[in-house]
Image (cartoon, rainbow, N blue to C red; front, side, top):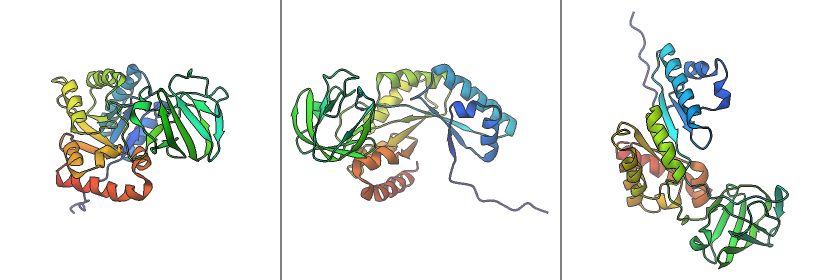
Length: 281
């Protein structure tokens, strides 16, 4: 009797590795459960951690007779506030608040805080909206007196150390590939990942730079563009160029949703998927 035919599962399961997956038996259980791709998050861990985990994946996949791909995920630029002397503050709607690039890293209070992005004052102007902590708090820029950005709180709440900053509508000029990313890219080649995710690309040029940096040694590594900046979806040509410069795209809903707004996210997500399929990615 012939066995029934099963359709190919187009949706793939990606699992991020970390300390929890290092425990005995966990990796085997993940692969047995159907994981197709393991993600190595270069935001955390040392090169030897990633090497050890990927070796364990290869061995476990062989035991289970499975092909499991490895995705290295570069951190990309992290635009964050610095730290508060008391660990956290509460911002009230309507109050003044200053992002001060000259302030000591641990000296923040309820009136001002430092910032890890030294050129913020060059990237914003009066009327811009800055979104903190994944959009939970909103600041309206009143004026810029470099190195300080003076704002008024439009949506308040608790704000703690090292929270992210997004500019509504995009426009922060941080390079997609940082010095750390360049070092991690070399690690990715060395340990033998199958795919490499580039965070926050603004244009095809960012993907092309990553390909150049991979060079001959990394020519078999597929590039994945993480679509999470408003600039990447601002016009059809830019999006198509990014897709063409990549082997795959990832809809990074968190940061993208913060920059373009939740109301626009679903439609834009569908457009990204449709264009990727049309362009055979």
